[in-house]
Length: 185
Image 1 (cartoon, rainbow, N blue to C red):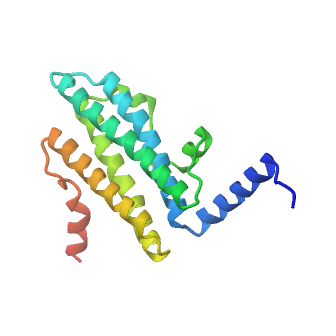
Image 2 (cartoon, one colour; image 1 turned 135 degrees about the vertical axis):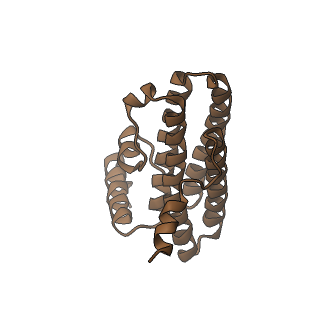
């Protein structure tokens, strides 16, 4: 049996990734999550470097803690994929393709409250992928992957509550509007 070349291994990986993203799997969905948290790290640093105003130093302390914890989760989720025999995204091209949160160089000019709102929005967006990945992991009988993803959902929800509090809001304030529209039907 001949060993596959590096090019053949990479081509097989790309083919599998394409197939997984057309019929989502827990692994493919978790790849989006890894990419989201990579990009989130960049965005958190951007905010930390450019936030201004009377609460800037307090915000920086919270941002530093979030950056540290987010980096831990970034590695934990990538490790979980590896433990499950999956390949996490590992290049800038893959992160750009798979991340579902957006970055913008103009964000450095936002006021502090708008900067913090982007963090809330990003964790909320990531939660859509986390909850989907949890359901897929359960369907695929991958209990430990589901367990790690449930823990990540808890981390994300905690971050939403922290940043909402900095904005003077309750944890889910501003999110109920979507729910209220459904109730009026």
